[in-house]
Image 1 (cartoon, rainbow, N blue to C red):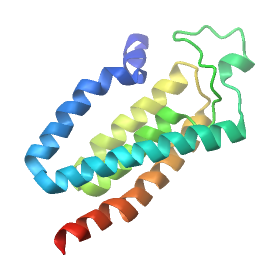
Image 2 (cartoon, rainbow, N blue to C red; image 1 turned 120 degrees about the horizontal axis):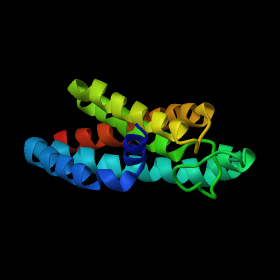
Image 3 (cartoon, rainbow, N blue to C red; image 1 turned 60 degrees about the horizontal axis):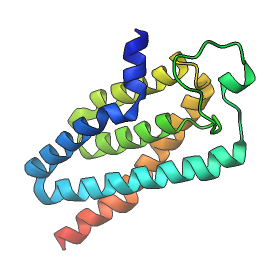
Amino acid sequence: MQAFMVFVTMKHNFYQLGIACAVAILVTYRLNGLLFLLTAVATIAINDASSHYILKEGITRLRPCHVLPDLEMVIRCSNSFAFPSNHASNTFAAATLISLCFRNTTLLALALALLVCYSRVYLKVHYPSDVLGGAIYGSLIGYLCYRHIYSRLLKLTKS
C-alpha cells in the first residue's frame, strides 16, 4: 500500500498519461478539445499560483513533519507550508473542470482526485484539513474557469 501511495503522490508519474489523454482529447473533440486543453492549462496555472503564493504563503500553516518531528517519513518533507494542499487543489481543479466538460468522466476524475488527497494524508505530508481546504478551493477555481473561460471560448467559436 505504501509504495502505491508514493506512486500516486508523485506527479511526474502521470505526465505520460496526461499527454496521452491530451492527444486523445484533441483527436476526438478537435476544436472543443483544444479549447478544453487551453482552459485546463489556464485553470491549473491560476489554481497552482494562487493556492501557493496567496493562500499557503498567507496562512503559513506548518506541515505535520515540522510540528511532529518524530514522524517516520516515507517521502521527503517539503519546506513549503501545508494549507492548502496544492496536490489536492490542483487535482480537484482539474477534476471539476473535466467533470463539467465531459460529464461521463465525473466518477473517474473525482476518484483520482480523492486518491491523490488520501495519499497526501497517508504519507503524513498533510493534515486532513489541508487536503479538504485544497479540494474545496480547487473545485471553486475549476468551476470558475469552466464558467468564465471555457464557456466563453465555446461561445466565441460559435459566433
